[in-house]
Length: 395
Image 1 (cartoon, one colour):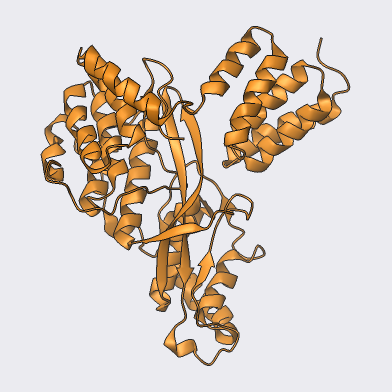
Image 2 (image 1 turned 45 degrees about the vertical axis):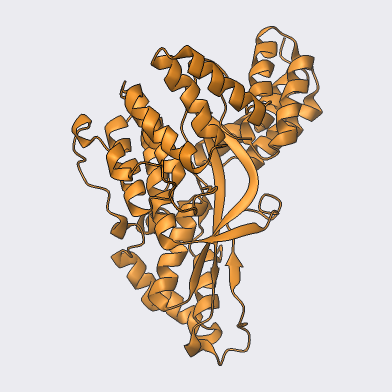
């Protein structure tokens, strides 16, 4: 699954709330433009607070205090690595909660006791660096999960980190010589373990790209621009940030500026489906319909069954009252994206429409289990409670 192109008005933003990186390590090709040529600061209001990569891993005073007392206490008997993990992820202490509604920096994740996988990786890495514990960041190849907000579709990937051992902790026999991988997804969702190491600069760029996409989601186009620009400056090899920049230009009504950003991506990755999908739309905006058609055919060859294809058909079937067909179509989406809560929610509704309360409860429970924000968990929990009380379908 890559970026969808489900209708002429759909626009795709590469929002990476749990992160993904694909093919961003190659050297620039001769026909790729310099990143600075793609920026147009004059079109956007100055940022109230300029994005600063230095703040992403910065420890707050509260973190410094936690480091000096709680983490130090746990480290005395187990070494810095295990002491850090015990102090951070023992449920009786910080009680951290997974939440992908916002990508938080280290200080925010600590203060709010929640974050997505990137936020938790950053917070853990920030503490580890201060302790002198070796850190390695990794992009994890897991099943692609798409979500959407209004007319934008978002692709989620995943990162984790591995922690080494300090030389000073060599006396702790319980601490091995190997790197210890720390992952913030349940085993069944993180079961694919194909990884590649990424730099701290890449992590910072991914954080800033997330913030850009989240700003777009919230309608803050000018703010999104400065985040995307910062992501590219921090790590020019992060091609997903160029795609986000193109989305921003189109939202600004400047499709002509979106084109070179997307073609920069294709100069590096000719089969990048997100860039091709967006170019279909940009060419349409510019009235270059033959080129739009050519890109559309190219996309169809790469992606014959785009994300949300069966879901959208399922929603149409629900509207028509064909609950059996709707459940079948939602099931097809679940077959290729088993852990996305929205598909399970709609499958529950289709089952309810069929009078199959057992299946409705099962699917709603899966929606709750796989939800990734506090708001969604509360919504699904309330609906599951109602289903448990229900004895027959509503008339």
